[in-house]
Image 1 (cartoon, rainbow, N blue to C red):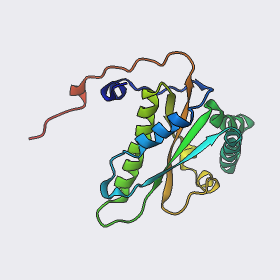
Image 2 (image 1 turned 30 degrees about the vertical axis):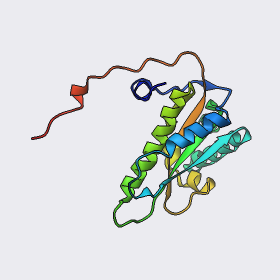
Image 3 (image 1 turned 135 degrees about the vertical axis):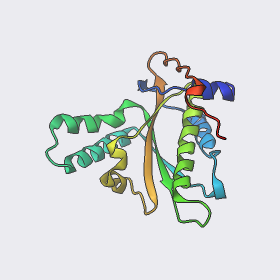
Length: 184
């Protein structure tokens, strides 16, 4: 697949099943992530893969986080437990930021976001279904602690990857003039 085709036609694919990407495909996903723009070559990212039984353990961590809010109904706990089971592979994208005289923390988080986008583009190019999800659990201190995140690290997204169920939707064609203007 040509690069421009991947950029113009990638869509989120939320309905996923087995099999997960194989080792060669995963290498391509992560190599694409490592090409993200990176001012200062800080490499302000890391990735955690979750699959197999790890998905159930992540679901329990999610349910614990929901329960901590108090008065959680059983349906909400069950939903939290089932979230990681929506795909055979999850890639958790972690921004690893640090103070730097020329590269603000916000720029480092953006670089990690670009790395995540690289994974999504590489997935699309290889015919792998993928969707980037966040939601309140991505920002939960309990989830961060359970994942072993350290100071200066934040979870910026859950990438769900697998084999698409059905044909992915067609990317909408947007009018560039609705988003682009000239200054001066």
